[in-house]
Length: 224
Image: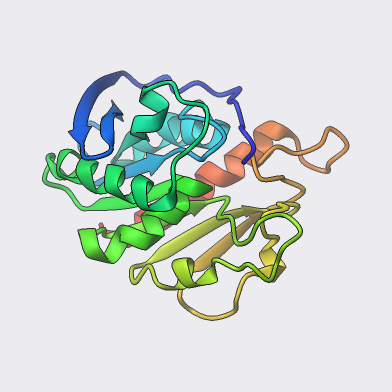
């Protein structure tokens, strides 16, 4: 899946820790809020790491709003591998990280982009996540809408926000199932990496701001 390198680098002070899991050594980079009320744990996709523009933008923006951000690197990325393992192995790595994510004693939003969003959805109820943030949820492989992964999204079982590009080949907003199981915010013109073309009616910076504004508003309504 597409990599989406960031033009926004998180400016908040960060610290990293490694965590042993049954899938290998993972890494968490923390961006702590001074008076945190929530933790957003966000995993990367199968085609890139935590340098993704949306993950970096959230790490830069959310701490000022009382949300500590934990950017999670799965063991395969830490090991320098080029190809992500099977979904089951990704879930094993995420489960192994969870105790470290809950250590601050705060409610944890399970989040991620693309493959990381799928992991968050599949494990949210089991792990006791307060909510799910799904960035660029890959509803189906490009050109194969019959291979829907909607059951993963609908099965999250907790409050869920989907932030989806209007031109995402892995699932455009109109393709998502209707209902009240989740909220969806569309980023106009954006692709799977939430990049917008130069000819779009909004700039890249505006697109990224729509992502962070949506998440700030949503997290503000979760737990006060």
